Length: 298
Image (cartoon, rainbow, N blue to C red):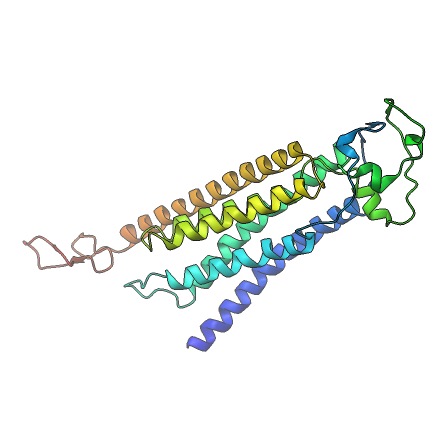
């Protein structure tokens, strides 16, 4: 019986994942077209010759993009799965065996939805604004910047042949910071989830875990400034995007969960009555013969 239940659960999870994956694939294909230049910038901000804010050397990334993506995708789900397992409630009335796994997937699906919003808004901002990064002059080597002093250039041609086309195009995508928006969204979402699920647990463990989430977001965001990959206002804008979307998505998930609980409670009380009209509410009330009042089964 348990084996059949587990197989059914795996099939259900697989079907849900497939529906989410199809939408996710379509989204990331569109974002890939933007990232790799198939969809050009709608607008590019020019620059002043010799501007010190965009004259830094390109040094690479302290937190690589693939590391950020892997941490943002894998760590929250592992944390949710472990939290649901260790905080699962032993229901008195025949609870489902793998409900903890399904619950973690419900939260993760909502989390991925918010992450897609973060990617979308961040990439649209980069596409619409096209602000030069702090290392723009070193990476692009614009032809128009030679023998130029204090002149604003709105159209330019990059002459750097030592870097890939992707890196050169990326030098004009500073605003907003994707590292900041993604790390802040992931950290706040996970900290919010831990706060809601582990309210009655250790008074020390949860603040430490939440502080680690916030430190990760701070590290990812501040290194974008020290690496001269973003201006401070890019990081601020990315952080605001992450905060706003995480607040909206987590608030939406909490409301849906409360509505489901309320609906489930209403069904239980409405469906479980006795022949003499008393509510049984599972086993909370003992039904006694006519003429006597029911008693609580505590």
